[in-house]
Amino acid sequence: MDWQEVAGRERARYEEAGKAVLRGNAAYGAGLAALMAGDGDGAREWLVRAAARWRESWADATPTSWGRPIGVVKALLLAGDDAGAEEAAAWALGLGCEQAESPIGRYAAALALLALGRDAEAGRAAGSIRGRDDFPGAVADALACVAAHDAAGYAEAAEAVLESFESRDAYLEDVPVADTVLVLQALAARRGVPTGLAPSALLPPDPVSP
Image (cartoon, rainbow, N blue to C red; front, side, top):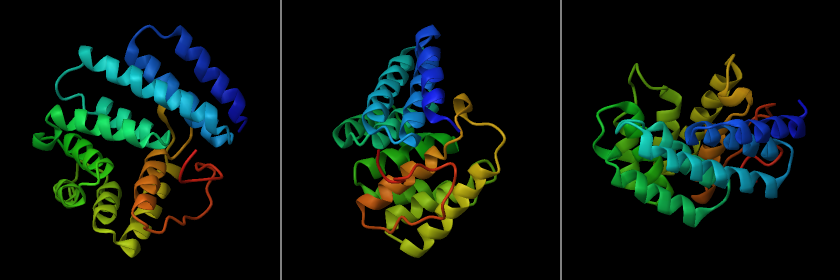
């Protein structure tokens, strides 16, 4: 995979896109591609840009479009912008994701609470989506294990999340990167939870930070 070429393609898509949400998607793709290419500065620039466009797009979203605040928090975590991620997490919680009925809303809450270091609450949010048929079980398990600082449980769940990405045929913006794994790794590393994973073509050389 020529990651610089992919990053260039995504930057071009960003310039051509009209809607903020589409610009956010393209910027995120550019950031992930830069991350895979080992371009830390480029990754941070485009991931922060993705977060800004997705947050801007909330004005035109429905109240249950939880993918957008999830994307904002994920992008800022991957950019290494801890202060920005915490502010975005507080914003996401202010939208009511903790009270959401949908599992994707509860996922948003768990992610935001982990970004804020509110691990006990994050564990409860993650626990509310474990064992459901309408949400990826390995992701819920990994979130719960991060919140509990459960190294053994996290290792097993993170490998399962990575395997689920490796079995996919489609990726956001056609950029084959296990971004959820990268976010989990960043959150685990903050807590001293070991983040070793098997090598994968879907992970950058440094799987924790750009």
